[in-house]
Length: 137
Image (cartoon, rainbow, N blue to C red; front, side):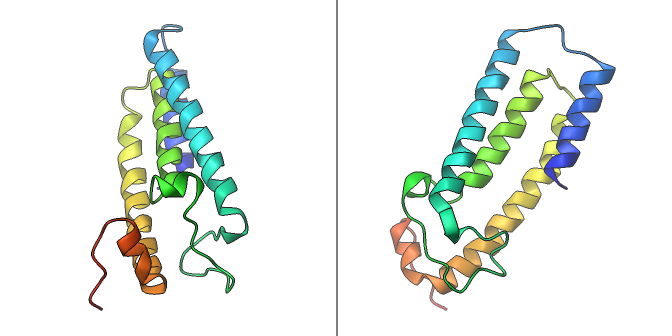
């Protein structure tokens, strides 16, 4: 499930059942949306040329990024995306569209697990850096 499906569900719900106006929920949603977008952009900027659309096919020059938001979170881009989508749903006063976020979050979790396997294989010292014991593989 992609972010597009979440956006489509939110848009359809907002069209069929418009929110009552600007409420505290709307402001909270806008705040989450802004924080999520900011985190995503910060993470993308920190990655720079180390960005790869998939961990399965990284560039040969790939390097481990440990600065910027990556010193605080293992996967800040994904966190930013989820915060942005949650903020959008909250700002639109969505009720049922939240259900579309569940498969999206599950897909993100799956992708994180796949990237973690690749990162641990390529950078065994990374496990120690994030407070986990090194793998015994």
